[in-house]
Image (cartoon, rainbow, N blue to C red; front, side):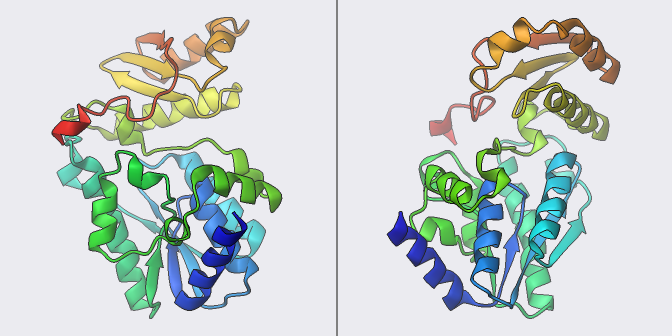
Length: 266
């Protein structure tokens, strides 16, 4: 891992002038921290705010940037109409739209490169958004250095970053079945429901929407806990107040790509 770290630092120094597409997650947070720790001056972070990005991710991104004194810009973006029906290619469309905004921002402000937090594990997962990133010539220094997710978490922990064990937080569109029309109200309900579960002690929980049913997926170790939670009835009541009619707990727990169709067909 030391060799990978050295390679990452070398890449960042060579790039020198760049904008980091900053989501507030572990990977992009560590990347921004590393650039700052190297004393690089010609870089900043840009975060895109849309309805399908969890509000907590935006606030976390702002807090992290302030804590480390990194220049940070938030760009608000309307919900793209070509994604309203949550098409199968949503990840590609999303990345193309969001990263085009970041690339244009970088050009207007005379930065040479745009970087993202893609890591070495992402290339083996189902990540259609990577195609859009490659088309826009976005650089992925973590992946280029061979750093995996576990590497990044370990390095972040050693650096004393409190985000080292932060659960992954995909965009809210992943909570909704493909080819289902997405409304602003639906996204707001999901965001509120997941914030509620976070506040009740269930970080990383997903609330998948099936009509008026909220299907909760918990991280490993939390399924039994939420099922036996003495405050379970209050949690159910609060979720219903948000707008769901039925509340279900998925006994399989959280699985990435849960709502993806058969991947070999894409």
